[in-house]
Image 1 (cartoon, rainbow, N blue to C red):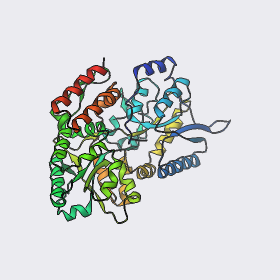
Image 2 (cartoon, rainbow, N blue to C red; image 1 turned 90 degrees about the vertical axis):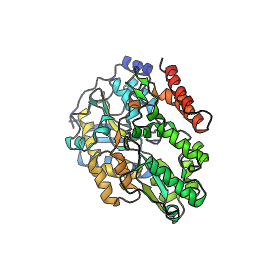
Image 3 (spheres, helix red, strand yellow; image 1 turned 135 degrees about the vertical axis):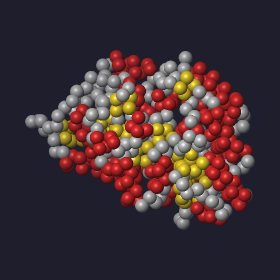
Image 4 (cartoon, rainbow, N blue to C red; image 1 turned 90 degrees about the horizontal axis):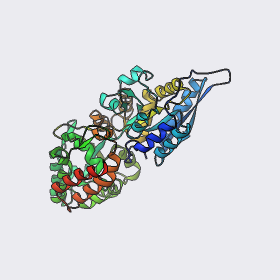
Length: 430
């Protein structure tokens, strides 16, 4: 999948070493057209939703029509195996000219020298339209290694009928505090006798670490192999608050062992009024919910440090080994045009990375169907410390996820959770 999946954040050191031995990172720059015909560029897209595939194909077709000296060949890839595929392609010198992936995965390839620096090639109008926090997520060692396209944020969605029946007071500002969120859940619980919230936390690490930024929780200090673990009160605030809501019954305990999509049928059926999902989930409400289901997106959750969340955008990169880096960058800039990026964002129900594309989506949708909240939530997206930590993927899978699951199941307390996360880092980061 795209940002919905939990991606490996970078390459393993041994793979980078192997790639370096193959002589990557020595690409050149080519100019458009020649006597033998148009320049041909391979663009590997990971778009998998029908609407996004249609939007992507139109972008390619429009570019080819407007640029007869350049021909972009669209190749369909898969989120399921893109990392391993790129490792093989870079090692064999067969990587696509234009690569669709996400920043957490591309950072390792950039560190190995396999991606072109796009800082000077990116259209200045596009670059200035990207928020600093998002641009930082595609900047490695001072080089812009990708164009950020669309991003996920976590949003709070509610069954409007249940909120109205409970007489709930819904925050109307740009953000909603965690205290307001908990009070809203209790208000619904008191009226209906059912939990106010259902939250699919079968794989809780991404949610906890993203939302921890709202309390200033970073989990790590430093970067790369030298990063150190930091698990204090800010990092534990989100899991502790969720556990407290489960304990008082305002959050459905059963949903803590389910995935985000698993809880949606119960939400549609009125088993609880509120659910927290990635913004992309809103794209399925219209087709999957019962006829007449009335839902609303609530303001983004904010902690003591605001509504910050981690920025892990989908990206377009250019292989440093491409013979036509300039032409590939030209296509990248075309893809990033407001109307093009807006069409991709709509297909994915994800935050578009440029201000111009955001305005295009708002203008087209009128801010309805959650788009006002999706765009507002993206303003606080920023690069998180864990995105620059070499052994984070291993720690997440082997240590953090089972430790958080144990905590949510009541099999360990906050002190035990803190110890498990800290000691586990020492085990995987030797």
